[in-house]
Figure 1: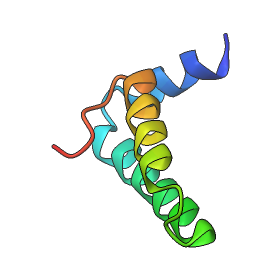
Figure 2: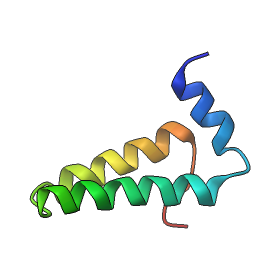
Figure 3: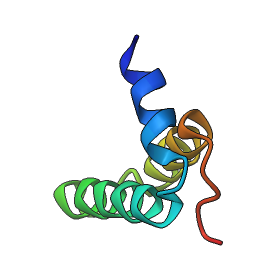
Length: 58
């Protein structure tokens, strides 16, 4: 079982927690880069959300 499979298993029933973790990671990346790569960070957040099957922002 890969890490993506484990993430999907955790995400089921924990959507709010996974959304918060993805948001927190994105905020940390934005803070470290001074927001220089905000577009790329947003894209990565969306892909991470899709990978775990969550519904970020809802």
